[in-house]
Image (cartoon, rainbow, N blue to C red; front, top):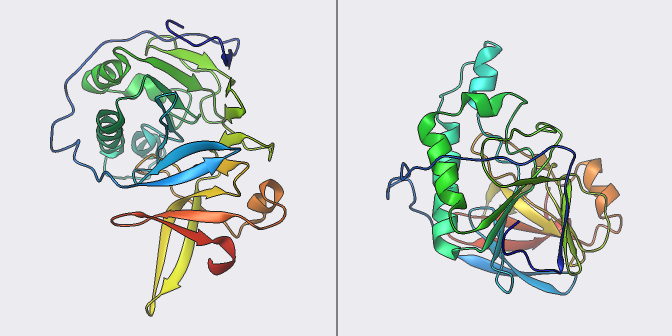
Length: 257
């Protein structure tokens, strides 16, 4: 990949590289977003947890998003479950906003960028142009996920199984390893405050590893009380960083239901 630092190790899958088209199809209105971030250290590395659900590593100018699940709406429609067909444009609009805000040198999409193996074929020409525009002037890595294990060749960027930069390893499915940043589980948490309950997507971290929230508009979530998180954070001493209306809220897992 052009411009990659020698300290960045990309574990490329047998699959393949994508190539692209472009589009200024993201309007200013679609790109509106909140700029609030929260400092989040992982294995000694400082990140910014963005209210959009992205992570930004300022020193590397690296933006990380997880589980875009593009074309989930059309996937459900093919099975007779009719959802408004606007999830891809909404997700790409939010992605345009966070890229504009941080101007990263590199973007890593942590897997399940597409909801199924043929979802990329259902992207509109404008969607493809938007993805190409995001990639202009920066390195872009698509990590393979369980929904999209064999990514296509025609959307630009590099396809990899995982990426290691210094003490941090980026992969789709979490293993609980130190220095790991993963997605896949779509964490969400519920807290009660001032007499009302709030359930939101969240980052989950114990300071040594983290699981990112799903970025996709229709991605859904799994409660951090689920047993799947106990395998990643066995001591239960982790913190849920909830995506609130105006800021990211750091709340101990023990306070979440």
